[in-house]
Image (cartoon, rainbow, N blue to C red; front, side, top):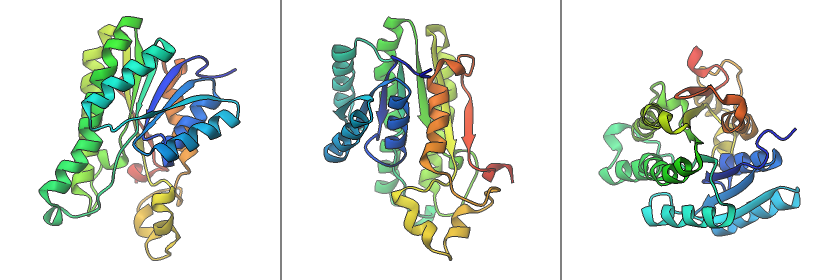
Length: 250
């Protein structure tokens, strides 16, 4: 049985990496997935792959930092699908610098992409979900929204903000039957991290205290997103689902 059959789901940053993995898994489980990204070439390629596998997907060009783009995306989804059941706020960027070397511009940029986008995206989705009687929002944070680590002050602050924004939204949106939860991945093997993980000197530093002694594959995080997007998690609200191989337990 398809776990998100007939649900309409928007995934931001869906063109590659974890976002592409989320999109592919959700579509394979019966959802109509709107793959949203600034990269139109990669985004359309991801959609084409989903369609070739028998899934249902469309591409939306979306700069998550722009309120006008969000309004246009919501209008297009409602026009095409009539509803939005799940919003997956996955888009994000990473800047690895200690606080003393982080510029104001870098701080502002990471908060625009990692935090402000989640805020304006959530706000844009609320009227649609209210009108249809409910919905689900999944915000992708990080283990670095839970614990400290060297050389990532702006990134950690942004992901910590997503964690508590999620909980605040859970309080505000419960009366409208809109569930809001966050996912906190550990070290994931993606195109962005592969070179670092392949370096024998860097790999143990990157994995840190990960108890399973390996990075996750994107699909392992996508399974958590799938659970929170499905009705199986109907009583999970305001929670943080940690997918880190034991990193934060050690």
